[in-house]
Each structure stands twice: as C-alpha cells, then as structure tokens.
Image (cartoon, rainbow, N blue to C red):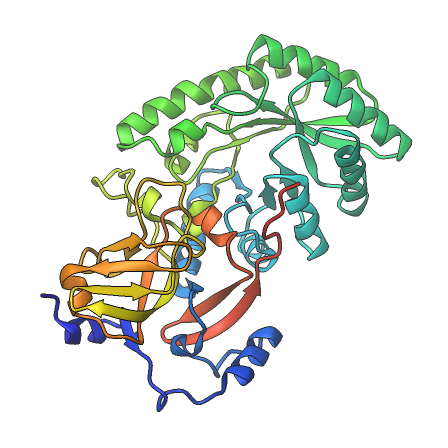
Length: 404
C-alpha cells in the first residue's frame, strides 16, 4: 500500500483543514477576481478543480524552446490555441517570439483586443461575415497574416481589402497533413501566382503543418514522417521563388518535431504550442533519449479534492469530464507517477481505486497531468500561476470557447 506520509512529504497531496485556511471563501473570490493573489494565497486556498501552471517549469520550457529555435536561425510563433490566454502570449513574445498563431478568427480577435501582436490565423476565414471580421482585425493589427487555400477565398479577401483600402498579408496553407490546405507543388504554385497578381493581397509565404508527424511515436519514425510531409512544402517555396514570386515565410512544425523541422533548409519559422505545458499525450511519443518524451517539463496540472471515500479502496475526487479533456483513449495521470490511478466517474467526478485510494483521505488535494492540454485549457475561465506552494498570478483564458 502507498505510504501516505511519503505522498504528503512530496507535496503531491495536501490535506485541507479549517485551521490552515486564513481567508473566507468570499475574500478568496474577491482576490481571484481582482488578480490580487501574490503573497496571499496558497494552492490549498484555491477552489477545485483548478487549473494550475507551475511557473518555474513553464518559464524553463519557454526559454528552452526559444533558445533552441533561435539558435537554429529560425523564428518562432507559438500556437495560442494551446493556452488561449493573452498574458501567456505576451509573455512568450517578450521572451523572443515574433507573435502568436491563432486557430481561428475569434481567437485572434480576442487576443488582439488584449494587446497580442504578430498574429497568424492558421485556418482560412471563409464566408462574408468572417471576411468582414478579417478586415476589422487587419485594420487594428495590420501585420496579421491570414491563411487561404483556394482562389475564390483569395478573390473574396482581395475585394474586401480593396473596399477597406487595406493591403492584406496572406499565406498559402499547404495540405501536408490530414486537414486543410491546397496540394503542394503545382497546385500551390498556381495559387501563389494568382495571389501575386491580386493588388490588395501580399503573399507572406507558406504554412505547412503536418499534424500526423507531431505525435508519431518514436523519434526516428517521427523524423521520417515529418521529412516526407515537409519536403514538398520546401519544394513549393523554392519553385515560387524561381518564378520570381517572393515567398519569405515557410512556417510549421510542432512540439514533437521542433528538433527535426529546424534541420530542414527552407523552413524558417516554427509554430509549436504544447511544449509550454506538456500533457500525457506528448509524454508518450518518445524522444531522442528514450521512450518518454522529456525535452520539456510538465507544467500544467489540474488540482482536485477528495470529496468522498465510500470504501477503503475507493476515493472520489471533484474532477471529471468537465475538468479534463476526454478526446484521448487514456485518463489523466497522477503527477506522482503510477502511485494513484485515475478513472473517469462522470461529469463532475473521478475515481481512485485500490492501493492509491487507501492512502488518501477526504479533503486531500490530488494533482493530475492532463491528457491533452489544448481542450483541457478550454474548460476553464482562468489559470493560476503557482511557484512552490504560493499562487503568484491569475490569468484569464482570454479566448475560451471561441468557436466561430
């Protein structure tokens, strides 16, 4: 049976008691709402389930990635769909990123409204209302890059930009993965030639995101898949430039391929996201050094409270489907390893069974690594930055739930 004293000493489980609480709930709620938490609140003061960001690990991850990518003479524009938080995007830009990627126009609008610059929207804006919104965003943030993958969308953007008296930056989205984009080589070159002739569009370059490579298990397997996907993008860029069409940008890459794609001549910008947080999914893909991907540290956790113990060998925590992403075939993982095994037990609850359950009591705090960081973050209104046991910051999830 797991030793409870060992768990408590490792700070992976913390017991709540009335004697330890120094604030009322109303006082805590007001401090959180104001963001006035530094030096006042500890982990144990936070209502659960709570999304925790360990700042030491987060800052280390950001520094390591930016240092590595810039050391390879590449730019980095991390993906904000991972965090959806303007404060995080601005922090990473201050550390050396050229901007932030956004998955859709709604994310970009929310981030721009909170002062994020250098946005690249990785999905095409299709339809009259979204094109109108793109013009408004370009007027506010002229450096924004919009992706497209077909001639009609290019014509629509050109017409709208002309009416708005704007010059719109666009990148061709290449189909090198399993989702959006135009086929690389001849089809993409033809679209590039079309865009180059449109007076209100400026070709910023190409986007090539190979999602199938990012989570390929095994470093050498991943390298092979990424090279096969990305070389057609490099060839497309080269052909455009041979035709006299400037193509300054080829952006792509992921947390799983950052140290692969930066070795490919012709790719000059990375757009990884998960490296800053990490999750169970990325931990399992393997790295250069072994079966566990350890290039970046887990920094994002969900804190839960044991709310019931129906039997000695079963405990229930207050985090279920509404606290963790459920799109992966594996559950959250206790941050202490395999000592405590989690299973989903409904919308609001998780189940701890067997030896792990015998070691915890009602009121204990258990922290878990999330299965998939992007959709998990989207379940929360705020993220708490913690350093050691102390809460240092509270940041709003700026673009939470932005689905349009």
